[in-house]
Amino acid sequence: MMLRDMAIRVLLVDDVPDLRTLFRKALSHDDRVLVVGEAADGIEAIEKALELRPDVILLDLAMPRLDGMRAIPRLHEAAPGTRILVFSGFSSTKLARRAIESCATGFIEKGLPPHELGDVIEKVMLSPAKSGCDAQPA
Image (cartoon, rainbow, N blue to C red; front, side, top):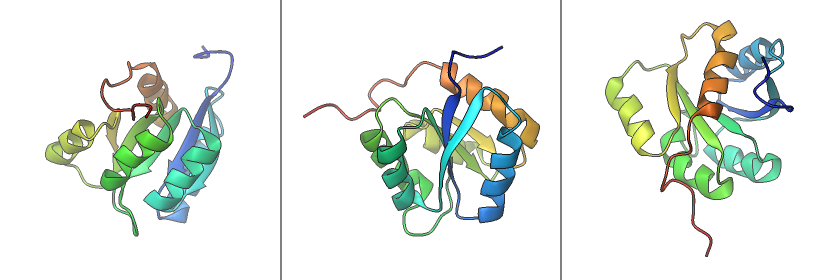
């Protein structure tokens, strides 16, 4: 079942090219999702979010230049309404809570089977927008 007439537009953000490739390949088999771009760090993610206006940003936390946690508020400013799904190689309830408090929409571990990624992205897309997380117009 399709979420809507168009696929969910996803931006993949991770500093490891092989992981981005793995996620892109896994999602290429899911009609609900369209990967519209990739970024290797938080700074590039902000630039791509401004340009591409994705529905969901799949965001790693541990990256050079600007890590995912510090990028979250800037991504909300650059692309209001975009859902942010944090994924991390670290299994930590405290880290997940901190990401959600920083306005991430969801948190998953990198160990998630790739074929389940589309389901998680759809769930994040269907979740209500978090109040107080998007930048207010000046």
